[in-house]
Picture (cartoon, rainbow, N blue to C red):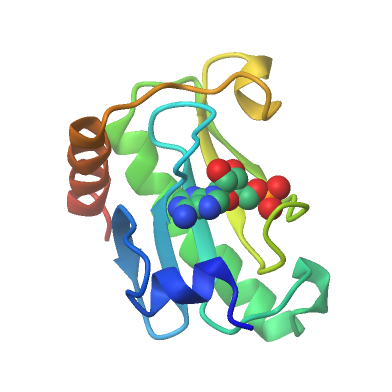
Length: 130
Ligand code: AMP
């Protein structure tokens, strides 16, 4: 069965999309640690990050780098943190999280964001994506 992220990539489930290319898709995490928390997903459905072949892994990191730069430009924060977990959704995804404290990368404290704020944040990050 297709993963929830494959359904998002195909447009079968809505998302706050930021950017995509031929092999990757970036969108806001729906239950974010902090405003601007973004997921970067390879379109190829692979469960664990180190099951990607090395070339696909490098390309995922390169795309994530460009998204992180756009987040940094958009969201005031000390830095953008990166984490790969995958215990909830078995489809590789890189978490990019604007950090102001250690709590922001602990996946415990969650930020409450309205639908309108999600739309605005996604549009702003997208506009800074190069
Ligand atoms: P994990 O698999 O533990 O790395 O976490 C999966 C992440 O996916 C969590 O942070 C969820 O909030 C996020 N997530 C799950 N479903 C959706 C969705 N439909 N849209 C955006 N993010 C989602």
